[in-house]
Amino acid sequence: MKKDNLTWADEFVLLELSSDRQAQAGLFVLFGAAYLLTLLGNGFILLLIGLDARLHLPMYFFLCHLSLVDICYTSSAVPQMLVHFLLEKKTIPFARCAAQVFFSLAFGGTEFLLLAAMAYDRYVAVCDPLRYVTAMDPRCCIGLAAVSWLVGTANSVVETAITMHLPTCGHHVLNHVGCETLALIRLACVDVTLNQVVIFASSVLVLLVPCCLVSLSYARIVAAILRIRTTRGRRKAFGTCASHLSVVSMSYGMALVTYLHPRSTSSATQDKVVVLFYTVATPLLNPLIYSLRNKEMKAALSRVLMRSSGSKQRTGLCQKRASL
Image (cartoon, rainbow, N blue to C red):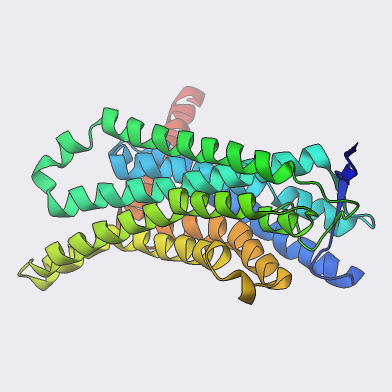
């Protein structure tokens, strides 16, 4: 495509982590297994919360949204990456590249905002438990989730539009495993000041502001926990926040390293590894953290298994009686 001596790429060539065929086969197995476990882990959380009525609480309402976002986020990039591990020519059409950028930004931004909403939920639960039921009523929960999805999507529309509008003037080789904003900007042959400003504003809106809100919430949570007189009470109060705090630290930490570090110290390889880790590892670790460090999830799993076992026993008994 040409316009006033400027050209836009019809497709992009992606540079994978390694050019060695055996290494690519190994990476396909590794990331394929991680992707499968991500789908199973997050799907398990959605199923368990849906089956156990005791988990129909605000915290697990947001956890359902978080699991759904993780499934969609990793699915926006990993399948394409897996296909490219098996192909000699690792190209991606312009339209598919734009779609990948849009969905990864939309789901990524939504996740940060959902984590902030979950931090507010924990703040009310620990600091103002008597008002928890009224403060976190269904209308409030639905509103916070809706705002998270809408702001994440709107932010993605703006950032994707100005990124994909950049001419590349013949450059079409992306030093990345997928279509990513910073990698695409490096190909531009025009001034990218506007893009840098938009990326910074976007980072403030969906990353820095939610991060500050989470930090403020946990500062008050810690202060409230320290006022609890008994060690058992402090441990119980902190236990309700441990899983969320672990996920927050991992998610915000990786994103801040990617988008808010100085450009002078950045490298394409560094960005590639960080984004790859965030795309593959974070959605995989989230369900593991919530499953292994959450007593209510473990108890819910036990109840579901016992209910399933009891149902099978009753079915078997009925079949025996019918045969008699």
